[in-house]
Length: 270
Length: 115
Image: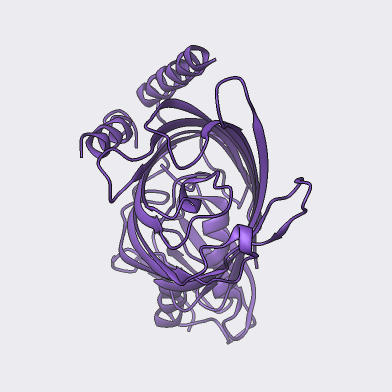
């Protein structure tokens, strides 16, 4: 409980000064409009420490395809490819299907908005033996964001994971334990300072905090990461880069500690 | 390495906080609506990013007769150009904006000409 509280306080400590948007690690309550698609593709390269002095690297490719049902609801499918770069080669992980409902949307100015969403879904045991939970695993996530002028703040709280542990778990959702993920993001639009009278690209600097903690054990794995990043957003696509570093980690028994993770991403809207 | 990351994060946080002091907002006073024989213009709120704003363009472009859509992000104002006599109604405009996840603020139209 103390760890969850610590993570929540640390994440929310950013909100006192700042207000966020669509960051890399923090889920945002954003959706494609009715009848339209958004594809987000990310490559996450992690460096892990199985024991002091040792290093293990991992690469995960992930694609999320979302389809807008109406202005406030969307469905999505996640297609992860795990084990990229390993000797045994990459394979499809557990495909997830989900539904996202933006139940609050309050637009108070040209760019100012406050939104909240709920995502529900389940991952299916489609992965290869070493990259699968081997059963249907439900997940749920709440997301909130507020954008005011150039600044935005967002936070998301979700439960994920469960099922059987992966053969060599590296990430929080691979250990077989239920993971509580709390993330918070602050985003500052660095260019343009003021939007012009046309549709133009924008560049943002992001700072995120991510907490992963086993939800069903008080003394389970826990990590707190900080992730600075950059986001470039054009009208029909966006590019992102972010690097997550551990601020704090303890009680790691079910997977190696994360030493750092670099994320590249592209999003397309059509 | 961790100390370095904490210091870098603190510096970034400080920079973000400093930026709050000189935060420049887009106009929050809605521009007046208008409608004539070839176009209709309404304020739209919540256009928080270019990709979000493009959602509005996509939805309004699907309306019958629409030839182009201009989004003024600085004022939060969207103008739809259409073929003569096929300018979308205000209701159709508002419905399309809502389907894209945004809001047309309530206001009395101050300039209505043509149809």
